[in-house]
Image (cartoon, rainbow, N blue to C red; front, side, top):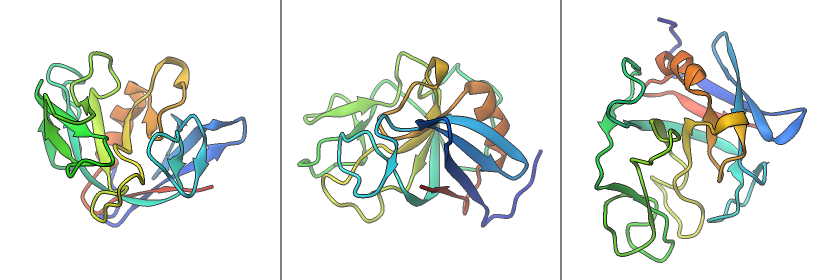
Length: 178
């Protein structure tokens, strides 16, 4: 298993070929990534499609039961249940927090029917120091076929997520560069 110091930083740079594609660097790995439909930027707002520029701690991970078996990381892991969601309603007190579904405000399910959240890492974007409307559910997750743009997250192929997983530990940060 690859080893990196506990204070390691995973870097994400924009690909020279597209503003919605990136290159993720962790130790010796260089992996293609999907970025937000509006590219990388500052001034992140809810729903703008921007992948936020900055450094975010890796806080925890979710995995969908029965998907990506054997995937291991050093992050606290939670198995996604049908009732698990994430609130993306800026005016709700649970904004940018995990919630129980059904939820009275807008919330996405953590147990998606597609593969995007088969394994998902919660990044500390607008989470510990939350501001309404500044963006929610900024995750590192599985990419759509062909690395189609995300809603603001960073996404990898399932095979590359497996390769990256051993680098995902407490104290690791993801740094998105412009």
